Length: 315
Image (tube, rainbow, N blue to C red; front, side, top):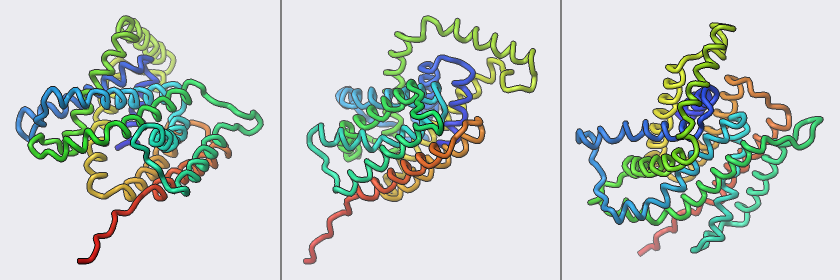
Protein backbone atom coordinates (compact mmCIF):
# COMPACT_ATOMS: atom_id res chain seq x y z
CA UNK A 1 0.00 0.00 0.00
CA UNK A 2 2.72 2.49 0.89
CA UNK A 3 4.62 1.65 -2.29
CA UNK A 4 1.48 2.31 -4.34
CA UNK A 5 1.06 5.63 -2.52
CA UNK A 6 4.62 6.68 -3.28
CA UNK A 7 4.23 5.85 -6.97
CA UNK A 8 0.97 7.76 -7.48
CA UNK A 9 2.15 10.59 -5.23
CA UNK A 10 5.30 11.11 -7.30
CA UNK A 11 3.29 10.96 -10.53
CA UNK A 12 0.90 13.62 -9.22
CA UNK A 13 3.77 15.84 -8.05
CA UNK A 14 5.45 15.53 -11.44
CA UNK A 15 2.29 16.76 -13.16
CA UNK A 16 1.36 19.75 -11.01
CA UNK A 17 3.63 21.89 -8.85
CA UNK A 18 1.23 22.65 -6.02
CA UNK A 19 2.62 20.26 -3.47
CA UNK A 20 0.86 21.50 -0.34
CA UNK A 21 -2.42 21.36 -2.25
CA UNK A 22 -1.69 17.77 -3.30
CA UNK A 23 -0.95 16.89 0.33
CA UNK A 24 -4.28 18.45 1.37
CA UNK A 25 -6.22 16.64 -1.36
CA UNK A 26 -4.78 13.31 -0.22
CA UNK A 27 -5.99 13.94 3.32
CA UNK A 28 -9.43 15.03 2.08
CA UNK A 29 -9.75 11.70 0.25
CA UNK A 30 -9.35 10.01 3.64
CA UNK A 31 -12.11 12.17 5.12
CA UNK A 32 -14.41 11.24 2.24
CA UNK A 33 -13.66 7.61 3.08
CA UNK A 34 -14.27 7.64 6.84
CA UNK A 35 -17.20 10.06 7.25
CA UNK A 36 -19.71 7.92 5.27
CA UNK A 37 -18.70 4.89 7.34
CA UNK A 38 -19.63 6.78 10.50
CA UNK A 39 -22.84 8.23 9.09
CA UNK A 40 -24.13 4.88 7.79
CA UNK A 41 -23.15 3.07 10.97
CA UNK A 42 -20.84 0.66 9.16
CA UNK A 43 -18.25 1.78 11.68
CA UNK A 44 -18.98 3.17 15.13
CA UNK A 45 -18.23 6.88 15.15
CA UNK A 46 -15.84 8.24 17.79
CA UNK A 47 -17.53 9.96 20.71
CA UNK A 48 -15.07 12.66 21.64
CA UNK A 49 -15.90 16.10 23.01
CA UNK A 50 -14.40 19.49 22.23
CA UNK A 51 -11.82 19.11 24.98
CA UNK A 52 -10.64 15.87 23.36
CA UNK A 53 -10.41 17.55 19.95
CA UNK A 54 -8.38 20.37 21.45
CA UNK A 55 -6.01 17.96 23.18
CA UNK A 56 -5.46 16.19 19.85
CA UNK A 57 -5.08 19.39 17.80
CA UNK A 58 -1.31 19.85 18.44
CA UNK A 59 -0.71 16.22 17.47
CA UNK A 60 -2.69 16.83 14.30
CA UNK A 61 -0.41 19.79 13.57
CA UNK A 62 2.68 17.60 13.77
CA UNK A 63 0.98 14.90 11.69
CA UNK A 64 0.17 17.52 9.04
CA UNK A 65 3.76 18.76 9.09
CA UNK A 66 5.11 15.21 8.76
CA UNK A 67 2.85 14.43 5.81
CA UNK A 68 3.39 17.78 4.11
CA UNK A 69 7.15 17.59 4.59
CA UNK A 70 7.26 14.11 3.06
CA UNK A 71 5.21 15.20 0.06
CA UNK A 72 7.40 18.25 -0.55
CA UNK A 73 10.56 16.18 -0.17
CA UNK A 74 9.40 13.73 -2.82
CA UNK A 75 8.29 16.59 -5.03
CA UNK A 76 11.70 18.24 -4.77
CA UNK A 77 13.77 15.18 -5.61
CA UNK A 78 13.93 11.45 -6.10
CA UNK A 79 11.61 9.29 -4.01
CA UNK A 80 14.50 6.94 -3.25
CA UNK A 81 16.60 9.80 -1.83
CA UNK A 82 13.71 11.11 0.27
CA UNK A 83 13.16 7.61 1.67
CA UNK A 84 16.83 7.27 2.60
CA UNK A 85 16.75 10.60 4.48
CA UNK A 86 13.48 9.61 6.15
CA UNK A 87 15.30 6.56 7.47
CA UNK A 88 16.90 9.05 9.89
CA UNK A 89 13.59 9.48 11.73
CA UNK A 90 14.80 7.33 14.69
CA UNK A 91 17.66 9.80 15.18
CA UNK A 92 15.20 12.66 15.58
CA UNK A 93 12.94 10.53 17.78
CA UNK A 94 15.83 9.59 20.07
CA UNK A 95 16.93 13.22 20.47
CA UNK A 96 13.37 14.44 21.10
CA UNK A 97 12.90 11.57 23.56
CA UNK A 98 15.82 12.86 25.62
CA UNK A 99 15.02 16.57 25.38
CA UNK A 100 11.31 16.53 26.18
CA UNK A 101 10.29 15.17 29.59
CA UNK A 102 9.73 12.54 30.67
CA UNK A 103 13.05 11.43 29.15
CA UNK A 104 12.99 8.22 27.14
CA UNK A 105 16.42 6.65 27.59
CA UNK A 106 17.32 3.86 25.19
CA UNK A 107 19.89 1.08 25.67
CA UNK A 108 23.45 2.02 24.67
CA UNK A 109 23.33 -0.33 21.69
CA UNK A 110 20.37 1.60 20.28
CA UNK A 111 22.35 4.84 20.30
CA UNK A 112 25.25 3.09 18.57
CA UNK A 113 22.84 2.08 15.81
CA UNK A 114 21.92 5.75 15.35
CA UNK A 115 25.52 6.35 14.28
CA UNK A 116 25.12 3.57 11.73
CA UNK A 117 21.97 5.23 10.34
CA UNK A 118 23.64 8.64 10.08
CA UNK A 119 26.70 7.08 8.47
CA UNK A 120 24.57 5.30 5.89
CA UNK A 121 22.64 8.43 4.96
CA UNK A 122 25.89 10.37 4.78
CA UNK A 123 27.42 7.80 2.42
CA UNK A 124 24.31 7.92 0.22
CA UNK A 125 24.89 11.68 -0.15
CA UNK A 126 28.42 11.22 -1.47
CA UNK A 127 28.49 10.77 -5.24
CA UNK A 128 31.39 8.98 -6.86
CA UNK A 129 33.70 11.48 -8.52
CA UNK A 130 31.63 14.46 -7.29
CA UNK A 131 31.92 14.39 -3.51
CA UNK A 132 28.95 15.46 -1.40
CA UNK A 133 25.95 16.01 -3.66
CA UNK A 134 22.72 16.78 -1.82
CA UNK A 135 19.35 17.94 -3.09
CA UNK A 136 19.02 20.58 -0.37
CA UNK A 137 15.25 21.02 -0.68
CA UNK A 138 14.52 17.29 -0.63
CA UNK A 139 16.91 16.78 2.31
CA UNK A 140 15.48 19.74 4.20
CA UNK A 141 11.81 18.80 3.81
CA UNK A 142 12.48 15.13 4.60
CA UNK A 143 14.32 16.19 7.77
CA UNK A 144 11.44 18.55 8.61
CA UNK A 145 9.06 15.58 8.24
CA UNK A 146 11.29 13.49 10.50
CA UNK A 147 11.27 16.17 13.21
CA UNK A 148 7.49 16.55 13.00
CA UNK A 149 6.96 12.78 13.17
CA UNK A 150 9.24 12.56 16.21
CA UNK A 151 7.33 15.34 18.00
CA UNK A 152 4.01 13.72 17.10
CA UNK A 153 5.16 10.40 18.53
CA UNK A 154 6.52 11.90 21.73
CA UNK A 155 3.75 14.39 22.54
CA UNK A 156 0.83 12.37 21.24
CA UNK A 157 1.51 9.07 22.93
CA UNK A 158 -0.17 9.77 26.26
CA UNK A 159 -3.17 11.59 24.76
CA UNK A 160 -4.03 8.87 22.26
CA UNK A 161 -3.51 6.10 24.81
CA UNK A 162 -5.84 7.88 27.24
CA UNK A 163 -8.58 8.19 24.64
CA UNK A 164 -8.18 4.60 23.47
CA UNK A 165 -8.40 3.38 27.06
CA UNK A 166 -11.86 4.92 27.43
CA UNK A 167 -14.13 2.42 25.65
CA UNK A 168 -17.04 4.87 25.63
CA UNK A 169 -15.19 7.12 23.17
CA UNK A 170 -14.96 4.46 20.43
CA UNK A 171 -11.37 5.44 19.69
CA UNK A 172 -10.28 2.25 17.99
CA UNK A 173 -7.06 2.19 15.97
CA UNK A 174 -9.02 2.97 12.79
CA UNK A 175 -10.95 5.81 14.40
CA UNK A 176 -7.82 7.22 16.01
CA UNK A 177 -6.19 7.50 12.62
CA UNK A 178 -9.37 8.92 11.04
CA UNK A 179 -9.56 11.67 13.67
CA UNK A 180 -5.86 12.44 13.22
CA UNK A 181 -6.39 12.59 9.45
CA UNK A 182 -9.21 15.14 9.86
CA UNK A 183 -7.05 17.33 12.10
CA UNK A 184 -4.11 17.03 9.68
CA UNK A 185 -6.35 18.16 6.83
CA UNK A 186 -7.53 21.18 8.84
CA UNK A 187 -3.95 22.28 9.59
CA UNK A 188 -2.82 21.64 6.01
CA UNK A 189 -5.73 23.71 4.70
CA UNK A 190 -4.40 26.67 6.69
CA UNK A 191 -0.99 26.25 5.06
CA UNK A 192 -2.56 26.02 1.59
CA UNK A 193 -4.60 29.19 2.19
CA UNK A 194 -1.44 31.14 2.97
CA UNK A 195 0.81 29.58 0.31
CA UNK A 196 -0.86 28.15 -2.79
CA UNK A 197 -4.56 29.04 -2.72
CA UNK A 198 -4.16 32.39 -4.49
CA UNK A 199 -2.24 30.85 -7.38
CA UNK A 200 -3.77 27.38 -7.63
CA UNK A 201 -5.91 28.22 -10.71
CA UNK A 202 -2.87 29.62 -12.51
CA UNK A 203 -0.83 26.58 -11.50
CA UNK A 204 -3.55 24.23 -12.74
CA UNK A 205 -3.80 26.06 -16.09
CA UNK A 206 -0.03 25.96 -16.48
CA UNK A 207 -0.01 22.20 -15.80
CA UNK A 208 -2.75 21.62 -18.39
CA UNK A 209 -0.83 23.68 -20.95
CA UNK A 210 2.32 21.65 -20.28
CA UNK A 211 0.35 18.44 -20.76
CA UNK A 212 -1.13 19.67 -24.04
CA UNK A 213 2.33 20.62 -25.32
CA UNK A 214 3.61 17.19 -24.34
CA UNK A 215 0.78 15.50 -26.23
CA UNK A 216 1.57 17.50 -29.38
CA UNK A 217 5.22 16.52 -29.13
CA UNK A 218 4.64 12.83 -28.31
CA UNK A 219 1.11 11.50 -27.67
CA UNK A 220 2.56 8.38 -26.05
CA UNK A 221 5.25 10.12 -24.01
CA UNK A 222 5.37 10.78 -20.26
CA UNK A 223 4.90 14.48 -20.88
CA UNK A 224 1.45 13.93 -22.40
CA UNK A 225 -1.33 14.21 -19.82
CA UNK A 226 -4.67 15.88 -19.11
CA UNK A 227 -6.44 17.24 -16.06
CA UNK A 228 -8.02 13.82 -15.54
CA UNK A 229 -4.56 12.28 -15.18
CA UNK A 230 -3.72 14.75 -12.42
CA UNK A 231 -6.97 14.05 -10.58
CA UNK A 232 -6.61 10.26 -10.94
CA UNK A 233 -3.08 10.27 -9.53
CA UNK A 234 -3.99 12.57 -6.63
CA UNK A 235 -7.09 10.54 -5.70
CA UNK A 236 -5.27 7.20 -6.10
CA UNK A 237 -2.42 8.42 -3.89
CA UNK A 238 -4.95 9.66 -1.31
CA UNK A 239 -6.77 6.32 -1.23
CA UNK A 240 -3.51 4.38 -0.91
CA UNK A 241 -2.20 6.76 1.77
CA UNK A 242 -5.30 6.52 3.93
CA UNK A 243 -5.86 2.77 3.64
CA UNK A 244 -2.20 1.97 4.29
CA UNK A 245 -2.01 4.15 7.40
CA UNK A 246 -5.33 2.94 8.78
CA UNK A 247 -4.17 -0.65 8.31
CA UNK A 248 -0.76 0.16 9.80
CA UNK A 249 -2.37 1.68 12.92
CA UNK A 250 -4.44 -1.45 13.51
CA UNK A 251 -1.68 -3.87 12.51
CA UNK A 252 0.95 -2.36 14.80
CA UNK A 253 -1.45 -2.59 17.74
CA UNK A 254 -1.94 -6.30 17.02
CA UNK A 255 1.56 -7.56 16.23
CA UNK A 256 3.74 -5.37 18.46
CA UNK A 257 6.76 -3.15 17.90
CA UNK A 258 9.36 -5.70 16.77
CA UNK A 259 7.33 -7.27 13.97
CA UNK A 260 6.21 -3.82 12.89
CA UNK A 261 9.84 -2.61 12.75
CA UNK A 262 10.90 -5.54 10.58
CA UNK A 263 8.02 -4.98 8.16
CA UNK A 264 8.67 -1.22 8.05
CA UNK A 265 12.27 -1.94 7.08
CA UNK A 266 11.14 -4.29 4.32
CA UNK A 267 8.62 -1.64 3.19
CA UNK A 268 11.30 1.03 2.83
CA UNK A 269 13.53 -1.31 0.80
CA UNK A 270 10.66 -2.13 -1.56
CA UNK A 271 9.75 1.55 -2.00
CA UNK A 272 13.34 2.54 -2.82
CA UNK A 273 13.84 -0.30 -5.32
CA UNK A 274 10.44 -0.05 -7.03
CA UNK A 275 10.37 3.75 -7.36
CA UNK A 276 13.99 3.84 -8.57
CA UNK A 277 13.02 1.42 -11.35
CA UNK A 278 9.70 3.06 -12.29
CA UNK A 279 10.96 6.65 -12.30
CA UNK A 280 14.44 5.84 -13.58
CA UNK A 281 16.09 7.33 -10.50
CA UNK A 282 19.85 6.68 -10.74
CA UNK A 283 21.47 5.08 -7.70
CA UNK A 284 25.26 4.76 -7.83
CA UNK A 285 27.28 2.41 -5.65
CA UNK A 286 27.47 4.83 -2.74
CA UNK A 287 23.71 5.44 -2.84
CA UNK A 288 22.98 1.72 -2.83
CA UNK A 289 25.48 0.92 -0.09
CA UNK A 290 24.51 3.93 2.01
CA UNK A 291 20.82 3.08 1.71
CA UNK A 292 21.47 -0.50 2.76
CA UNK A 293 23.53 0.59 5.77
CA UNK A 294 20.98 3.20 6.89
CA UNK A 295 17.99 0.87 6.56
CA UNK A 296 19.82 -1.95 8.34
CA UNK A 297 20.70 0.52 11.10
CA UNK A 298 17.01 1.45 11.45
CA UNK A 299 16.08 -2.22 11.87
CA UNK A 300 18.82 -2.85 14.44
CA UNK A 301 17.91 0.35 16.30
CA UNK A 302 14.29 -0.78 16.52
CA UNK A 303 15.29 -4.19 17.80
CA UNK A 304 17.80 -2.74 20.29
CA UNK A 305 15.23 -0.22 21.55
CA UNK A 306 12.55 -2.80 22.21
CA UNK A 307 12.07 -3.40 25.88
CA UNK A 308 10.44 -6.75 26.63
CA UNK A 309 7.50 -6.66 28.98
CA UNK A 310 8.49 -7.46 32.55
CA UNK A 311 7.74 -11.00 33.62
CA UNK A 312 5.11 -11.48 36.25
CA UNK A 313 6.42 -12.72 39.55
CA UNK A 314 5.42 -16.22 40.43
CA UNK A 315 2.93 -16.36 43.22
